[in-house]
Image (cartoon, rainbow, N blue to C red; front, side, top):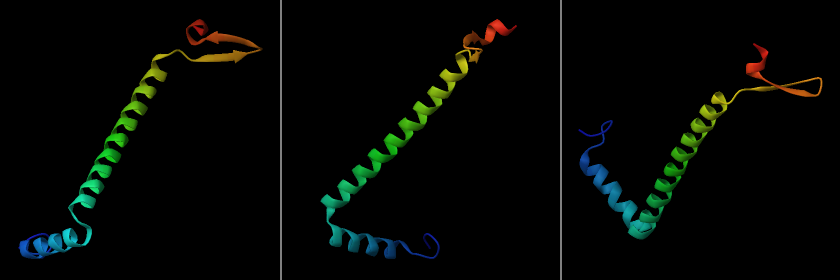
Length: 75
């Protein structure tokens, strides 16, 4: 028994029908596009985390009466 009551033979039959309908070239292109999208998503998440870490490392500035003061000057 396979996934959720679907046998391996049913899965192979579905795969064969999909290959006949779309062809291997189109399926390869879809796979490549999906892989590229996942790669770009991971890269953007990583870049977002780096940007957050960079923002935390820099001291915050405040504008008081037209003057810019650093966070460390407040102490």
